[in-house]
Image 1 (cartoon, helix red, strand yellow):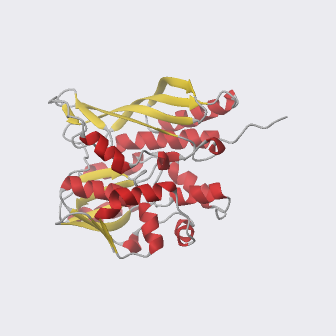
Image 2 (cartoon, rainbow, N blue to C red):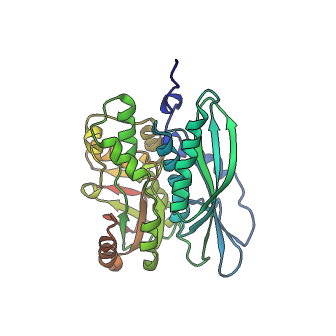
Image 3 (tube, rainbow, N blue to C red):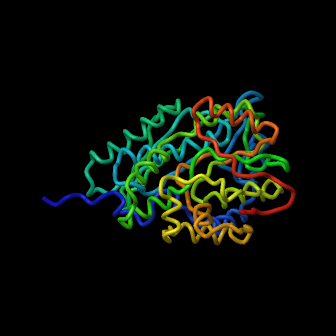
Amino acid sequence: MTSSPTLTSLARAGGCAAKYPAARLEKLLAGFVPVDAADLLVGLDPADDAAVYRLDDERALVFTVDFFPPVVDDPRDFGAIAATNALNDVFAMGGTPLLALSITAFPEELPTEMLGEILAGADEVVRGAGAILAGGHTIRDDEPKYGLAVVGTVHPDGIWPKSGAQPGDALFLTKALGTGLVLQAQRDGHAPEGALAAAVAAMRTLNREAAETLRPFAPHAVTDVTGFGLLGHAYEMASRSGVRIELDAASLPALHSALELAEAGVRTGGDRRNRDYSGPHVDSSAAAAVEALAFDPQTAGGLLVSLPADKAAVLAATFAAAGLPLHRIGRVTPGAGVLLR
């Protein structure tokens, strides 16, 4: 009997590393004229992690869509990771997910049971986010892909934009880096023992608890770190806020074996695309491996948070008391671009 191909063997690129190059996307979107709608609080000018539309003085809708090819061969893990990545966009805006619809492309030659496992993994995560998986759309495709369109709510005055960072802010990151490096090493057949399991656990972790713990601190700016890497998303926050972001290389948290893999020369295709996008705006004196970690495309990464430095100690204590990871990685200063030192 012929066995079915694995999920990742059918994918040209996995997870958020499959994103269209940010530099090309930026040029493409620059040609669109923003819709003149007073209730569109967040749209394309500037673009953010999700769109936000005001319903009334107390409620606004948060709407996002995200899907990608497989990052792992286990179908339940793939569904869970893809769902986590999409739901995290709502949490990054300060919102609460309500409803999700599946977006699925699936080869007919793969077992239907495999697709069922993908959907089951997604449903588990959607329920964990406090939302409902209510339907979706499935097409035939040679390359499997999965993700969600998600609708949530947020108070119009409680939106967390990328564009609000202010000089004097402290910068925090809620998850370790290196998912792209680990996944690439796994595809190449030389991931260290335990590295994939640690990466999968991180990618399956919703940013829900981190966002709920952060909410009382009224952060100035928040984004989730995904396919453009830490430096790409830091550059977006810096440019849209009109500030300079300074990152401490020694403070960047790394997943199990990720830094060692970077030192060994492991890179993803997304690394090059991310350097093309944000590299010209990054001033770095860090070691090559740390740079690779910072450019590495993340899947379902953590929140990058900018908030007043006088709140930093209490924020750290609150996260620690809740048993949640939090890493202080830098600061916001006057100027432009990103400094990695």
